[in-house]
Amino acid sequence: TAHPQHFHAHPMTKARARAAADDGDGSSSPVDHVLACLGAVHPAPRELTCNPTGVDGRPACKLFLRGKSCSPDCHNAHDSPELRPKCWPFERYGVCPRDVVREKDHSATPCWFPHVPSPELLGIEKPHLALQCELGFADRVAGRCRELLGPDSVVQAGRFNLARAADCVLFVSCDTTTEGKSSHNGDASVGVANTMRRLSTDPHLLSSLKRAYCVGVDGVDPRSNFGGAGYVTVVGASKENLLAEVRAAIPKLLRDVHKRSKKQMLVKARCFPKWCADATYAALERDGDVNLEIFQPTAHSPTHYIDVVCVKNRAHITVWPTSFVEESIEFEEVSRDEEKSCKTETETPQENLPSTLRPYPALPKPGSCTLEYLLTQHCERVKEARADKNPMCRAYFKLEEAADRAGIPITKDWHCVDVGAAPGGWTQWISDRLLMLEAGNSALDGEHKGTVWAIDPGLITLDPFPKNVVHIKMMAEAAIAGNAIPIENVSMLVCDANASPAVVTQILLSVKPALKPGAYLVTTFKNFCKGYSEWRSQMKAARAEFAENGFREEWFGHLFANCAQEFTFVAKFEGN
Image (cartoon, rainbow, N blue to C red; front, side, top):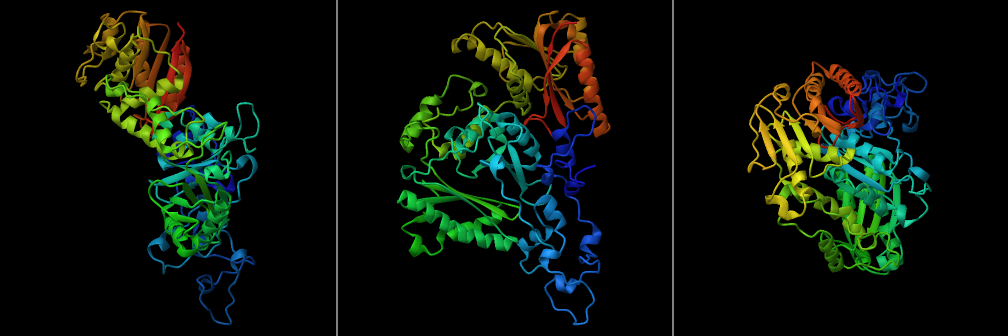
């Protein structure tokens, strides 16, 4: 039975989230209580909204709930707000439908029930960052953060509204250091900057994020030569009350930071959700004559950012300096020209390589990278590099990510088979990797040692057609029977066919005679079944059947490049 607070709440919406925590074994996965607020939205019980009762069991007076006067001889309950039951949807999802209505119509009736703010996160739950992404990616972002930062790194979540397709934020913390010590000790090596650096090791994760907000200033040196930093959290009994608290807290926080820096601050604001932006901008501009010498808003070349993240009637307000240098031993300030020079040296363009072969931008070394670049620029550079790759189809990124996550050690002399290759996305990725691994860029037009056999009766639309690809226009079973590919000489077998897991398994096992011991298998399990339960059962059976046929599972999960109901399976062939 689910915890009462999260009753009826799946980790995500049906198509997205069942696959989120699902391990593919056909059993029910426990509800992730951190992500439960991002689940499928259910209406509040009718008795709560239509027939509310007081603490003594009497029907509640609806006129009194609306803030209107009733007759003196009214016998219904007139409970004060603190005695009423908590707002049902607000407790589960952090958003009240009445607040959503009042965003468009300020005269609409406010919610009858209290909205209790979320508790302050302290100790090991104190977050470093708030990551904004789409709801459909939240489960995968949370899972990857737990892999990179620790199993308890995702401490809270919040959604923008109650819509199925909307944005959300995940609060994350680097819960342990490499030495296993607590991360909340003021050490720069385990603070905000280091947390973002760890996440930046995965370009596929960065590509799924919309923005990374600073939540707290752990590891950020507050000394004056960096411009100062500060963090405060405020709560409100309602959205209107919370916004009033935000407007009051921002000037005070900026003045406190200014006491340490003694310099005028040019402040750029970043807000989640959008409804808190007006209050933030108003706070930056209020009492202009008084605050002009201390701070003023700007859209370009700021000295400080102010990040305001509001979740469940609690606002996290952080002021952080753009010039702070991550993990700088000497705490020397890096100018924008020096930072640009550092990025140029780190990411020398390789114009002679095809666009798909160009690497993702690497982070500058610690000690030469500002917090502004880590939090606001590097993610955008990764997205631009991903877009510039411009492969023939989106499937290209599935195999790229699967190879990274499973650590497939592809070499230039590998012989590979792509079953169901058309239109050629996975074939293109393997061909690119083989070309890149050949000795030097001069080998791009020379002799090719590795080979890709693309098996599909359909058309492979690669243009120009790679020299290391052989298109076999037949079914996989016929290719093996006709000796179209060599026996026991294939180092990697891949398949991204649009078929059920059961069908894909039988096709791939028919190609098993071509594999040599140590060969890798990569395939996707798609929901081309009669229903979700059958798809999940077929995945469980497929994994077991591969194990019985000499394949050791290396990785299985939901990639960022996967569709909602699609898993990727990676295994290593150990022989019969």
